[in-house]
Image (cartoon, rainbow, N blue to C red; front, side, top):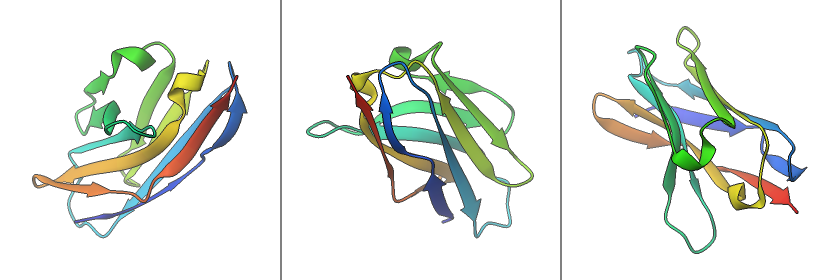
Length: 115
């Protein structure tokens, strides 16, 4: 299991932008898939975006065209650029890494979008 530390959450107005970052440590191996999930109050955790080592991406329909995921494989970091934010994007955002079939999670960072 790897350790994940997120940064970059905060409060922003509708239409604004935020960038989340996540740094992974504790692994001698390359992490196959890194990504972001989110959980709003009273709702289940849901996928936001993932990016594999080979460059394949997967986005939730609700964020396509607004969010962009990127990673630095050499540094084991993953970022999420979030543009045109909406109140519906308000949630705790969690970094995720999958290594040898094992999921690791960050502690979460709050993103709040005011109307």
